[in-house]
Structures are given as C-alpha cells and as structure tokens.
Length: 191
Image (cartoon, rainbow, N blue to C red; front, top):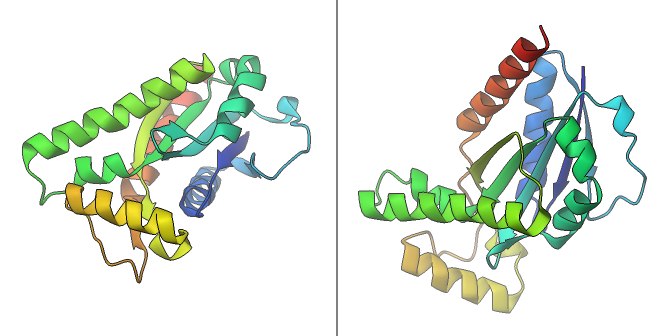
C-alpha cells in the first residue's frame, strides 16, 4: 500500500507533522510520498496511491490557500481514496491544555472543529476522516508585525508570549494514534 501525503506549511510545523505521518505509516508497512503543495508543480499520479492524507495549517481563520486550491482541483481523487484531513491549529493546543479552564478548553475545541468546517465549506470536500492537531507558535520565523500580533493573541489565550523562541504544542503520541487508527480501519475495510 502507498500513501500520498499532501500538505501546505508556512513556518514548517505542518511539514514536520506530515513527515511524522509518513514515518508512522511506514511502521505499518505503508510507503509514503510527501508533497508540499505550496512549492510542488508536478502533476499527481493518483493511480499510485491507495491512501491520501492532507495537512494544512490555519492562519487568520483559514487554511492555506494553496491547500484549498489543491483540494478543489483534486476533489474526486480525494473522495475515491477516502482521504484524511489534518487541520493544524493553535486552537487545538488550547483544547488540550490541562491548565486551562474547562470552559476555555471546550471553546478551543469548538474553534478547532469550526476551522475544519470552514475548510469543508471552502473546498466542497468532505474528508473521510478529519481531526485537529495542535501546531506551534513559531515566533522566530514570523516577521515583526506577525510576531507582535501572535504574542497579543497568545497573551489573551494564556499561551506563551516569549517571542525569543518557538513553542511547539503538537501532541505527537496522539497524532501517532490517529495514524494507527486510520490504518487499522482502512485495512479492515479492504479485508
């Protein structure tokens, strides 16, 4: 079995997540190709894949526009492959924060789910599986204005505001479990 993993990343965290998905798939004997849809112009050979994953980060309330265009263009292929969508969002970090109030965690979880709903509406594609994954505050990779804006938002949300370093929130064991669950269901449905 071979999987295509298509992603869009700005600061690199979604790329790291896509690479982790590929490594985890390989532990189950699933070969994986990675494709950054922001930089790749090569046509996709869909016939090579038995599985597809998409990963995109949220910025200013929307996923990467390159990923949205990619999904619109390849809607039929993604549906045929029962593709998976991974939404990389800081809202999920708030949903998983054990120090946050229950109300704040619930609101963050709703925000993360809403971003997936917005993506579905913008693309017209309903993924077979979708789940939010916490991203990172990549302060050192932001320009001055974005760094200031993100620090202000982080302060309001109770997130780290030290802009001299990056803060990663991705729950790697949870991501690994998502991959294992999708592989198990996919194999069971083909047995």
